[in-house]
Every structure is written in structure tokens, then in C-alpha cells.
Length: 229
Ligand SMILES: NC(=O)c1ccc[n+]([C@@H]2O[C@H](COP(=O)([O-])OP(=O)(O)OC[C@H]3O[C@@H](n4cnc5c(N)ncnc54)[C@H](OP(=O)(O)O)[C@@H]3O)[C@@H](O)[C@H]2O)c1
Image (cartoon, rainbow, N blue to C red; front, side):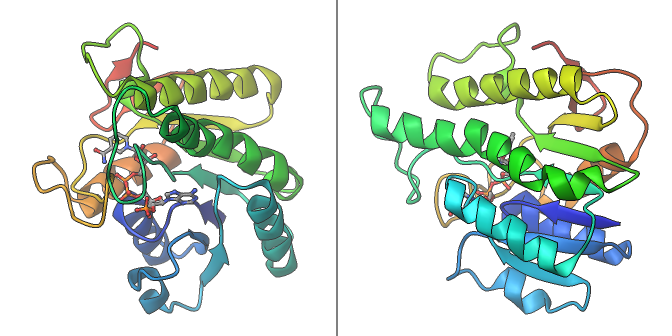
């Protein structure tokens, strides 16, 4: 299968790319961090590195053209890129609306850009599966936090967008997913060692769900649980 993964430089995205290549798929890996070497080092014959900033219309459009020059169809799209604050990990305070808009632009509108620009390639596939990495933080019913609301707001918006797509694009399959608490790079260049799962462990759960069967439209957690949203 031909699969696009966003935010593939590190964290869950990089581990998804490695697992997908291991399964024999052709992967178009969205590269956002030109200074981060791990993705380029994979140098696999079925791996295509695609410069991709999901926060930019121009970048997503250019990426879709690049992929269209390499393949006629895309079978699966994995919208994984996500942020929680500024690139250096700072989140300032509740008055930093510029940061909040940036997070919204990447986490929510980023998926809108992806679907719109890659739809022509997805349309030509017989598989047509759209996978979105969301978060339990987007669940309004389960919300117990008293901070980081801007992150949860972006994931709630993503969930609503994906549900709307599900209503509209009935010949597509959807996966809306909470990947668990991951030892990844959200919030800077240092790994969050206090989290629960390594990116490789989290990628295994995610791949099982993305390729497995799903009876209904839900926000599904890595452990199989359903999140109300
Ligand atoms: N980590 C968790 O515990 C957790 C829990 C629930 C949900 N999630 C979700 O899981 C997904 C993957 O996150 P992760 O934990 O693997 O974090 P990560 O290690 O930070 O990986 C995310 C990747 O996306 C990149 N990225 C940032 N802005 C981008 C943009 N505009 N366009 C394309 N790529 C961009 C990141 O670069 P930078 O590193 O420079 O930002 C990074 O390489 C995210 O959607 C996140 O919200 C994570």
C-alpha cells in the first residue's frame, strides 16, 4: 500500500514509518524538521521523504504535487503531526493567544489541508483509509484538566472535523485515535521520559488499529477503549 505519514521526523510518526516499511508498504514521510537526522538515515528503497509543514497551505500543496509525481494513488493517510506549544517547548501563559492559534493551525486545520490536497490521490485507491491521531485531551465529556485547554480545544476541533468527513465521505474508512502517553518530543527537543510508552510500542498499537476492523465511528484509545467526545 501507499501511505502518507505526517510529522514523521521523530516520536510516534517516525516509529510508524519504520513499522510500515517493515510491513512492506511504500511510505511518503512528511519531513518537517530538516535538522533532525533519524528519518533521513532510514534510507529505505520504499521510503520517500516529502518536505511537509501541515501548518502551511503552500507546503501541503507542494507536498501533494511531489507525491503525485511519485505515485498514482494513495491508500492511507495518517495525520499524525501535532504540537502543544512553541517549538522550544515553552507554552507561556493563558494570554499567549498567538501560541494557541499556532497549535490550532497545526493540530486542527493541518488535517483539513491534508485531506483537501491529497483527496485526488486518495480517490483513486480502492482502500481509502483516513487515520487521524487525536487525543483523549479532546474529549469534552472526560475532561478533568484545569489547564492546557488550548491543546484539548484543537483535538476537540479535529474530532468534529473528522466526524463531519465521516458523514460526507461515505466511501472512505476512518480511524480517530488516541495513542496513549508517549515518550516523545512534544514540547521540545528532549524526550518526555515520564510518559508510559516508547514510540515503537505506541506505533504497534496504532498500526494494529489503523489496519484492523472497526464497526463504528468512535474515538478509539490504544488499549481498545472508546472515548466519548
Ligand atoms: N505524546 C503523547 O503522549 C501524546 C498523547 C496523545 C496524543 N498525541 C498525539 O500524537 C501525535 C504525535 O505526537 P508525538 O507524541 O509523537 O510528538 P512529537 O515527538 O513531537 O512528534 C510530532 C512530530 O510532528 C512534527 N511537527 C510539528 N509541527 C509540524 C508541522 N507544522 N507540520 C508537520 N510536522 C510537524 C514535530 O516536530 P517538532 O518536534 O519540532 O514539534 C514532530 O516531529 C500528535 O498529534 C499528538 O498530539 C501524543
